Length: 42
Image 1: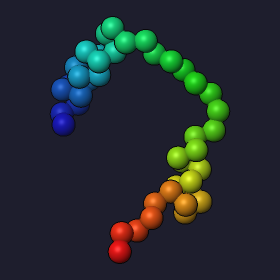
Image 2: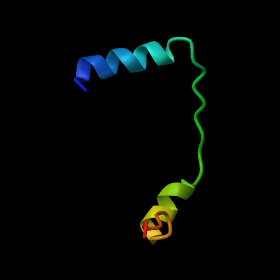
Image 3: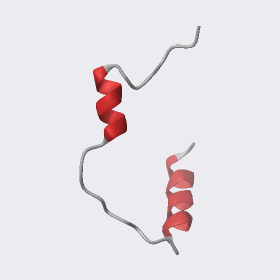
């Protein structure tokens, strides 16, 4: 996706949105880096 198109898309999505800033640990990142985030398909 071209950068200008991505910027325009994000701008339109956030125009009327409420942005919620959260703090704390990212559980998905912690699981992925520990090797528990993905189960291979067999």
